[in-house]
Amino acid sequence: MFGRVGEEAAALADNGLTFDIVPGITSGISAPLYAGIPVTHREFGESFAVVTAHDKSENGQPKLDWKGLASGIDTIAFYMGISNLPYISDNLIKNGKPADTPVILIQWGTFSRQQTLEGTLSNIATKAKEVNFTNPAITLVGDIVSLRDKLNWFEKKPLFGKQILLARTGTDESELARELMEQGADVIEFPKWKRVSVPVDQALLNRISEYEQILFTSPEGVREFFEIIFTEGIDIRKVKADFFGCSTKSIKALNEKGLFAELEGNMSQDGKLLIVSDSDFSQDYLNADMFITSKKVIDEQFTPIFKRVLEEASVNTIVLPSSRAVKTIVEEGILKEIIPQQLLKTAKVVCMGVRTAVTAEEYGIFPDEVIAAPNKTTVIKCLSRKESELALMY
Image (cartoon, rainbow, N blue to C red; front, side):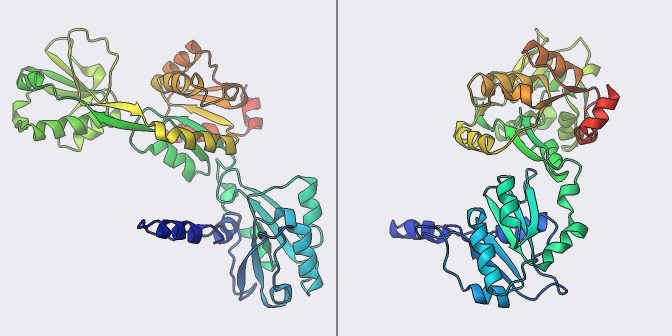
């Protein structure tokens, strides 16, 4: 609603380009809901309107049917109207809307950085000026605003207000990021990876039956290895080796293919070893053969998007899940001036695991917290603690 999809679609049509239009949930409905206010309710009104609060005129003040809005509409959502609040309030009051009608301003609705300001038609403009409340924001007018005290669900989530920069080393969707967002946080994942194929080592595949142990460094490597085996016409029964994984995720990926596997620490020091990796893998097995299934590279087309998102956000937490993640965020983010170095001083840095913390310190990053036994539950518990609780702990 009040976006520019019509203009954009017309421009495409004028240039002979085909397109699809995907309907979305307009902010005039979604932002109030995330502030605990449904825009319709049988006890608070039977009409709802969405209204532009800024037009193309010289003063930007829209010419509206103020009488109709004030007397005929129970709940009104004004889009991007912070600069016109005095104009909106005065016209609604002049045309019959009670001066004590509740009003709420919702900035960055549906995000963890969501901010709200409540008042009435008589005082909301003054309140907004006092705290320098700015767009992007929705202004919701109506008695239905009173439901917020009872239905304010989103801002009660344990990680509401957390704006997290999460360092990534994998191309798959991050379960941790998904869980952090479910708990109310904004999560910015850096960087965005993509996979590029590499030539298949045919000579190694011809010797596949000779290996006694195969170590998989990632779940992606597991999937790609067996896809290559199948594509190259190799019967899986030629693989005689015992399987091992560097992580529980790799073990799970092998289990899903009906294969038993153990963690890397249970490997024998004897026997011919093949390491299957989806990228270059720094390893201590000097006599092992390496089979690279693909390589991960940073998808540079997402860099401008990431910079824009980072400019708009106010990151207050950095989560480093692994040693490789530390290396990536420093070398690909900070040294390339995509991530401001100052962020390491202003944001709370959380390391998942002691080894990660050691690597961080080697790069000059001193974590505020180290989660010794990290998993999704312990990470959320750590991030949910209030500063007052942390002060008591230390």
